Image (cartoon, rainbow, N blue to C red; front, side, top):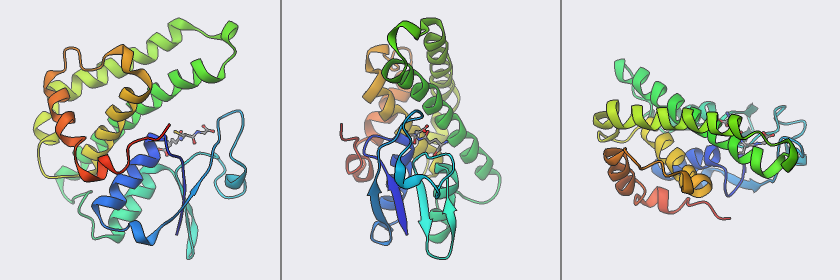
Length: 202
Ligand SMILES: N[C@@H](CCC(=O)N[C@@H](CS)C(=O)NCC(=O)O)C(=O)O
């Protein structure tokens, strides 16, 4: 299998952490690509119509995207530990969706400042994305700490990657303020070997 990859993408990082945690790194070849919404990565054209990373090319089936589908596929291949069955599964999927929502808002902010011409940038829109991130972090801090502190699942991996991305690109906004429990949890989670091995390289 070939994983289309980027060293700073937090969505790719979810997949990489899962590969570490499920000991499947040796089964996947990495191809690093660089693309943006206005300059799509050429190797992805014809393989993944949205031209986003991650995408997973397989010898025996169509290329998979996006990160949630790839993570579910790879976890299933490893025995299904990170997406448990039963009632907890819906919590895991909701937590992963919440973390991905943080990423979606944070990535839009990054694109706005990096890609959009300065005279067309819209501060109110950027700040509104951050309000989404703040609300999501507050909900994690208030309602999800028991789940985050239980045995490893994909919801936790996604939250870890989302908070790591906030540190990478939006550190100055200070997501830790008022979220002490979440900040303490992240300090420990971020020290896992799978998180250390997948730190973004800028
Ligand atoms: N929902 C997608 C989001 C993936 C995504 O937005 N990846 C970014 C890199 S962090 C990308 O490839 N952007 C290029 C583009 O939007 O054209 C997922 O979970 O995989």
